[in-house]
Each structure stands twice: as C-alpha cells, then as structure tokens.
Length: 201
Length: 291
Image (tube, rainbow over all chains, first blue to last red; front, side, top):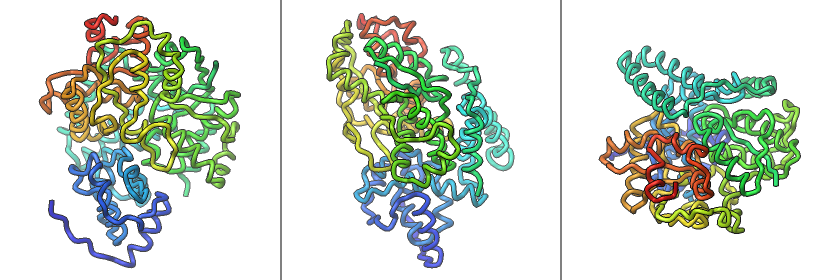
C-alpha cells in the first residue's frame, strides 16, 4: 500500500506531542519504527494506518491526520502493540487519548457509530451505576440512527442495523440470555459525583 | 474458604450462566463467593475510550468497597472487569493525587489492601493442588478444546507482573489437564475476536472471529473454551455468521472453563445452563458420553 509523505510541522508537533504523551502516559519519542506493532495489529490492514504510522504522524505534527484516521476509531484495544513493543509504547493508550481529544474538541469522529457505542456505554452506567444491556443498546441505536439520518447511511442503513440487532435479540431471548431487569445501585450519589468530576473541565 | 466476588455487569445479564457456574463450581471446591455490596460497573474498555478519569474512578469505587469488605482476596471472573480493576489498583498505588481526587468522593475509600484474583489464578491453583482433579469424577475424554484467552486475560497497557506467558499462556490448559481433556496446541490463543467491534464494526469482527475458528478447526479442536464473557458471546453468537461469510462449515461449541469443570463434576446440563449457547453445546458432550 503506497504511503504518503508526512510533512513536518514543528509548531504543531511540540504541543501535540506533549498533549498526547501527557494524556496517554506513553513516550512516543522512543519509537524507532521497528513495526513489531504493525505486524500484530488485528485491524492494521483494514485501517491502512498501523500504530507506528500513527506515532509518526503525531511526532511530525500531522494533527489532522492523527485525529482523523481509521486506526483511532477502529483500534479495539487488544494491547498487542504495546506488549510487543521493545520500547513499551502502548499505542492503544494513544488511540484512547485521541478519541477523547476529538470528543473534547467537538470534532466529528471519523466513525460516529463507534464513538456512540462507547459514549452510550458510559452514559448508561451513569444512570444506574451498572450497565443494563437493553438500556445501553437502546441508547446506542437511537444515537446511531440520528447520525445515519444526518448524513451517514440514511434510512437504509438504520433498517439494516435494526434488522441485524433484532435477529440477535430474538436468538438471545430464545436462549434466555436476554436480561430484562434493570439493576440500580444504592450508591448512585457517589457515582454521579465521580461522573461530574470526570466531565468538568 | 470465603472470598470476595465481583461479577460485573455481563455476569448479571447476557453471561449470567457464567455467574451461576462460578458459584456452583467454586462452591464445590470449597471456595464460597461473597458478592461485594453495591458494586458498580467497572467501565470496561468503553470508559478508557471516553474518559480517562472515569476509567480509573469507576473500578476504584469497587476497590474501596472490596477493601472495606473484610476479605483478603477478591476474584473477578470477567477478563475485562479484572483487567480494568487491576489497572486501577496499580495506577492508584503510585498516583497519590488521583487516588485522593477519587477517594474524597467515596465513603469506602481505596486503601490498596484487597488482593485481586482472576478466575484462572484461582482455578490453576485448584488444579495444581489436586483439588479439581479429585472432584472431577468424570474425566473429559474425547474433548479436544482449543483454549481461547482473547486479549485481556494476558495483555495490559502497562507493565504488570502476570503469572502466565503473554504469547503462549497455559492456565486453561492446566485446568483441562486436571479434567482429563487434551487441549490442542494452536496459533490463535490470544488473537483478538474484535470485542465490541462485533456490534459497532461488524465486518472487521467477523473476519477476526473466522481466523480464530478456522485455526481451531484446522488443528482438530472439537470445541473452544474461554474465560471471558465477551469472547464467549462473540465466538458463540456470531460463529454462524462468520462461518457462512468466510466458508467455514464446522461449528465449535464455545464453553466457559467453569462449564467444563461443572460437567466433569457431574453437575447437570440444566443447572450449568449448557442449553443457553448459540452454537449447540450439549450434543458434543452427550456424544462423548460426558452428559
């Protein structure tokens, strides 16, 4: 796959590198492009961007590219890259940081569907203290549908998605693996305070 | 012996069978699981992808509750919950500021006392001591499991001392040996199934899952066995779709490690909820006269 040259932007590189390194706790400067990470990344060939390339983008100051590539969103946090890296750079922590930076900058994520999944999971937890699968999935599908209508795959994509989920839901009900109860913890005030602390700036 | 127990959200929902199996199987091994009071969701991988503070604070609340429980150890069967909780414990050990920032909101504060155990920590110990072997009245002959660890059982985004090899773990193999089952050697033990991608990034996930199944089938496994409820759900619920899309005709039942121990102990299929699998899981065992 032909790669494009990344232009070095010194004035962007320093603050970007600092922010990513601080948030992720990873020393991106230690990367010497050996690509052990790239060989083990399960989504590398789908995203076209492997962990080493993402690090390179950040180091050289390609902020646009770093926040807007498929790896940031499709990284499944399998942690293979970090455990194999000879310099202990856990790139999954970098993609986690970048996801949050995109969110905080109010930018449109490259994959709204994936972003909605994770934010719905956390929102659902903030309601009950525990993640109730039906409430979470309902919220996720609702947010997803809104994004598809606003310029994603449209009504067709929504119907396709709901069809698939309904099929899975039916099997789960038949196998008695669908949980209908709503569990709520007593210590909600503590959880709400933690959420408030986590989301205030 | 009583130990603290954190089931996590999945074991109270779509993987409730794992919760039941853990209690029953461990109970018969003399380990009484005491669920900690009023635990909250650990945040799983989603918290880490959305909000760094909450990814530490949510499991921290559970650590505080565990520290106050009076038990020395806590077992967490879900690989994801165990991973996130251990990460929080390690991080809070060294990051005093973060610990203070979280503790000030909690009534049961994190003290760093509780010793966290994964399900394999417990089961491997019980295998090595001979406890499982002596209770395993029915040896699982004919069962050829491919032990599937997935990602979170052995890999962490920080330097953590773990009891097992990262690239070629043996924990489940040791348990299988104690049960008289011959686990196969295979190449996709720790390969990612895609996790949440099965819902939010379907094509990627189906491909990853098919790679795993194909290798297991190719090496003569007649089932998969796992410790992670996400892996079990994925490899079970989507195996048909992945098989159809990528031309794999065989279907392998996906057992929790506790199911195999339960069968070996003579616990009934109904009690183990063996009938709640997407890929039918009782026929293989009945065919081998194990059920």
